[in-house]
Length: 318
Image (cartoon, rainbow, N blue to C red):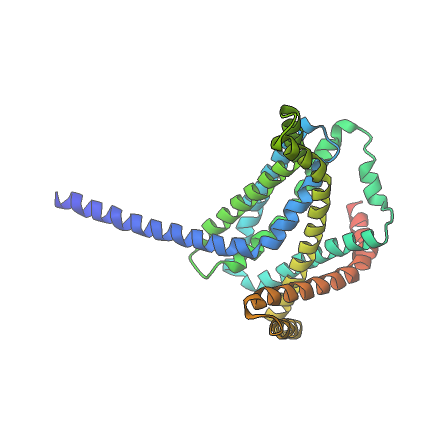
């Protein structure tokens, strides 16, 4: 009996440790998840474009395939690398974050530049000129998973930096939880968005009159505008997150002026408004400054990427 009681006591102690570990993982994942919000918004805004032009019956299967690829990117490819970096080369995390932030700035600035100065792109037009329509879906899915890899890398790296110092298993559990939650949230939301017009059409046909009919018609008519808004929000989030990563990265590496200047400006503007709104105004000014710096850096990178790096990559591919 004494041995049994001792065993039960040990089991109870292990259970307490496990429960504490689970709480630590959940808390770390929650804190890390909030830091990745900007990239997640961008990911959710970019993803719906990959099903444009396909039959409605193929939309959800395509999104499911991309979601599986995204989960593979995060859990199998990126999470082990992130954990290894955290354990053996933590000094590399900030430069890698800044590299990813530069990519976000470049992508966002390119979208802004293309909107202000519309122009053709030979590479994009070549991609759209699909000789065999049967391969279009495969090409779209592959392209989406490649793009997702960059965004997923940024999400996992940001999440890793946001997790408080803890054990290997807490970090691994928190990263896995963030990866699963972000993927389900992003692609579940994308699936709902792309099917919203079908839902609206169903409601409008099912109910010839009344509030549900009005709701259905509103969904059908409103989805094109919603997609446009998502595109703008995604670009803004991309520039804000990219600029913020660069500013904080420079601050971490010892270059304090952009960070300190923005902080002082945001505080000064916040003092001009009522106290209740000061926090929101300070955040908005900081985000705006980060976004402006993101645009500037992205515009600098456009000729570097398009005229130097892209040709070099094309030559190396051959």
